[in-house]
Length: 58
Image 1: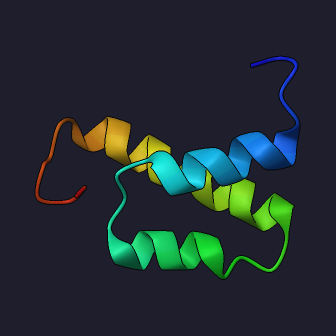
Image 2: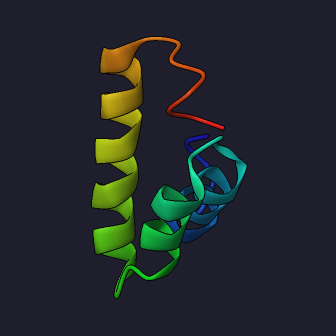
């Protein structure tokens, strides 16, 4: 992971994580890589805080 390019890692996680369509759309529409990273971190933190909520994540 340390050798992976930031953009590749952020974009790959954005695609592979089981977020809802709305969350994936927000990641897709992020105007910059920095905003996409911040959004991704927020979504991951929210998912971790809410536990294994199958209804929230698809």
